[in-house]
Amino acid sequence: MILDIFREFSKRLPGERLEQFIPVATAFCIFLWCAACAAKACFSVQRKGAQAHGVLAIAHSGQDGGGAAICEELAGEAAKKGVTAASLQGLHAYLREAGVSDADIPGRMQGALDRMAELRARLAASDAFSQGESNVQAEALACFDRGDLASARQLLFHAADDAVGAGARAERYVAAASIDHLLLDYRAAAEAYCAAEASLETALADGADPLKKWRLRMEQGRALLAAASADADWRNFVEAIDAYRGALDLVARAAAPLDWAECQYCLGEACLAFGLSEKDPDRVEEAIDAYLAALEEWTRERAPFDWAKTQNSLGDALLALGEDEGEGDRLRPAVEAYRAALQEWTRETAPMLWAMTQANLGDALEALGARTDGQEALRQAVEAYEAAVNGGAGDLDPSSAAATNAALGDALLAMSAREETPGALERSAEAYRTALALQGPDAPPLERAKIQVNLAYVLGSLSSRSRNRSLLGEALALVDVAVAAIKGGGAKKDIQAAENAQKTLREALART
Image 1 (cartoon, rainbow, N blue to C red):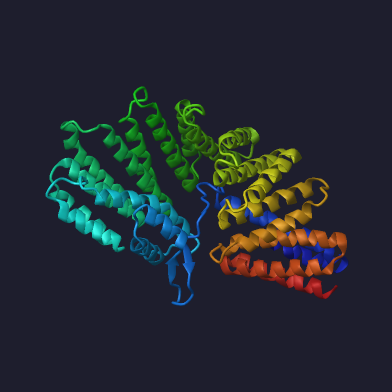
Image 2: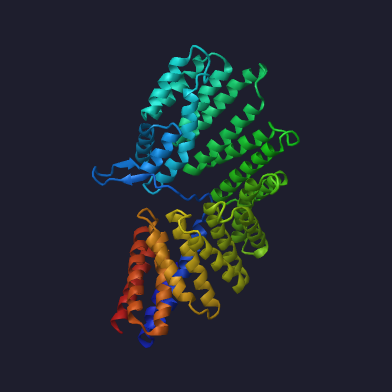
């Protein structure tokens, strides 16, 4: 590992100024961390699927050892949609019990609200199920309204076999699957959708809408992809891809071009997620093909929002391959795809998506600049990142905002390394400090350590220019903290190297 290089510096330090040592030594740390991140997340795209949370759904009271209450804003929105406060509390309690972090719960609660409202309305509808089945329907609704979502699910699923008619049986399975989604049991949801599809085989013979089977197959794919994303099980990825390919056989492009495009897009999402997870470039290529197919029908004129989201996903796939291949041939089209998405996702019409895509554009431009020695690409990357974190203030969730500020710091640092750029190092230090401030307690320690090391390098460089010893002291303190994280999560040889590095730095400071 590159940390071993500190041993070499210790041999030369007596004859060198400490201010000269710090930038050089920490530069090796930057190389270490960039290499480590590339090895750990080949084909990774930072903000793929990132979501901002416009409403803070949970307000912690601090009075009951970690209890929380639904905030008035979300409760009011839920009430307007017919969702009871008790059902919200029940979902919140389940998410906490399932180990969802406090930082993620608000977004999950907000995202679940429409599904809860739709499900409750269906259970409350007088024609939701066949006649004579009102008892199950009423019991499930009562369980749901009091927050006992698991019992409502059990009632619906296990009573499906007793339903009168194939259509009613399918309805119960679909309702059970919807609750499975809320409870994060995506595999169970996929199985329920599969059971509903099987029930429809009889209904189709009686003249039911054939597109219902297609919709259920699509829901299977979504549930399986969610399961794969949750547990990184390659089998769920494969089954999700198979489900979407099966759905393509159920919808004719000529008869339903927009549905066909949706299927192609979802297939692309599954292939891309699988390719990223398994570091498989062939799967990423399949995703690109699927996105391009979707764009043939989802044109900007016919489906502007869907066109934009497909352009953004196409950019993700091209960026993933470009970062892996180390050439600009994939990165330039990625830049073009992100810029296309921004034509529809504007700051005024879709602020969250605009900020996310600006950050993605910054990633592509920074990668292009790093691989082509393009200072102009780095300058444009800085502009994109600054647009995301400044123009999009409040539109990125804290985790994404932290990652974007860290990326901004990296781009400014790379610019200053290529050529003298007035103010770049100072702006880089500010971006890194903002990133550290935005990171929550759940941030991975090694990820935080990377930012600390890069900030230490910037401060060391500024100290060598200004002879400001306080900056140097701050840099050394950051390195001490980062080294502790390395020792806590690194391999044995890396821990030894980190301890040697820490010792070398302290001895150097004592000689000043």
